[in-house]
Length: 113
Image (cartoon, rainbow, N blue to C red):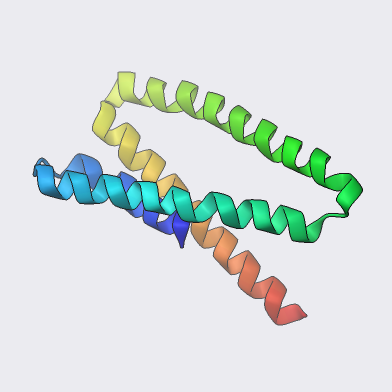
């Protein structure tokens, strides 16, 4: 849900110029991220043995930083070629698709158990 809210916000932000709506979408983007991180940390805590927890958290942080670096390179190049609006829309769509895949994976894994 957090990723979905983030994706929707990112897609809609470049489509509006109304300040109030931009503010609401920005808040929604922040809420989406705020929902996501605590859940991930909780899942890592619950799904790892205590002696593996530090490694798991370190890997999460490293992969997040790597993803941020790659995202900056990819989406800044898209923005240079096609404009910031297209870059933001592409990012939002990527986040929405990713959240959909994660949701489907979660539903399938829970129905198997």
